[in-house]
Structures are given as C-alpha cells and as structure tokens.
Length: 117
Image (cartoon, rainbow, N blue to C red):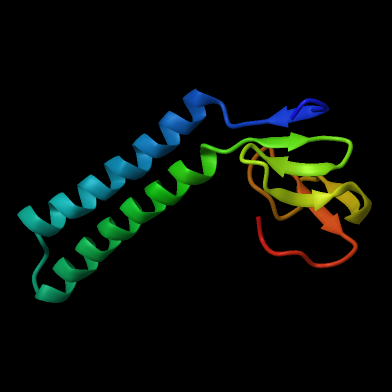
C-alpha cells in the first residue's frame, strides 16, 4: 500500500517465545497423559484433550501474529489488503489499562458494527 501512515506488527522474539511456551505446555500435558497419567481414564483423556487444545491455540496464535495492521488515509487494513475499518467508521481508540485488549494493544470503537477482524 503506497500511502501507509503506520504499520503495526508483532515482534519476532515475542512471537517465538509465545509459541514456544504454548507448544511446550502442550508437549508436557500430552507426555503426562501418555507416560504417567493419574489414576483413572478420565484424567488421561482430560490431559490429552488439554494438550490438543494447547496445540490448537498455538496454531491460532501463529496465524494471528503473522499478520500486520496497516493504517492508511482510507482506513485500517491487514497486510493482505483486507479492510478492517474505514476511517469514517472509527469513533474512538482505547489504549487504557482497563480496556479489553491484548498487552500493548488497542481497542477500536466503531460507529456501526462490522465483522470481527
């Protein structure tokens, strides 16, 4: 996009550490579930399901952190060119401590609801 005003992306070290922690958690849960499960089949199933859930979260995080946000005079887009919000639909931006957002992130308020992005 030729007229980019700002670009926002996740740092590589933060991405690698986050993914490594989730994959290690999944590995530990699966290993405990297979090698030394507590008494009963229910615990084994629970540990294996939690391990699979952690792997799923790692994949979702990998996909989400691969994208960049690009602000242009027209609006906010991702690096694939998909529109997230037009400038005229943005009514506010919240970076406050109590806002529902990821660490060091932000939350947009829009004049009309749009699909999640």
